[in-house]
Image (cartoon, rainbow, N blue to C red; front, side, top):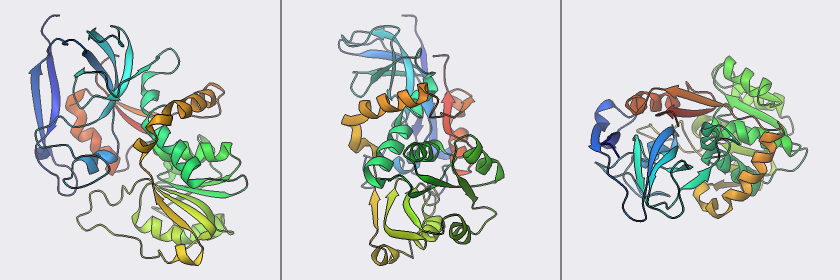
Length: 337
């Protein structure tokens, strides 16, 4: 193989608040040939997720932190360009944790073959990737919605929330989204088929919930935390289930805010349960099979916000998540795939 240069972003410092340019080191290294049992992947697309902010923090979490000097962790899809691994051939497309870089040398663990003929590669980072798995298992296993119940989803225009609402509709529920801005709310209703959407930027969430969910909220899928979680807590139905998937409003806060209205859980005999998608890894294929069917039948819509900027655009593109500038799944295009 002719010598190639791999450009990558490494974590240079632990961020305080929003990640700054000084928190990153833009590095390059020569791409090495795979050894026995290894394969080399050219990264086509990278998944940019709110969870990345948590991975940059030191301390105990559901996954070890990215170390200082380490290539930033990121899910991605790419094409095998060299292989000495019996399970992967040159030309195969794969998804997995590839890192914020142009090339990934892998031993194959954690990589899954994907077929670009069945769905465009970015879809394997959205509905058929981690966000889709999160939506599927978080809603169905923890939320346990029943036909006729009211499901509320925050971050409804985002990668996970948009899929949660669509699955809830498939299960016969009344679905209400919460999103920021008129354009996102219109997208949630018109494109993703929610019954209603509350604009938290211009509406009083608690008052709006009284109007659109007069009988209370049976399932709340929370992606944002903070004030919106507190508002929904006041509107729970008896036996409600709250799925704590994320809290993007708190990730960059130097003084995070917890729920003040949690006694509503007691009054309404409700539950609030944390959800981490990696716990369902042995069942991903089951979810992917069902959601592939829904996609093929036109019952599920996958929306990707693809930024064509290469690896060097990573720091600025990541900030789009925390500014609420993306709709659907935020993806960074690295190479042609």
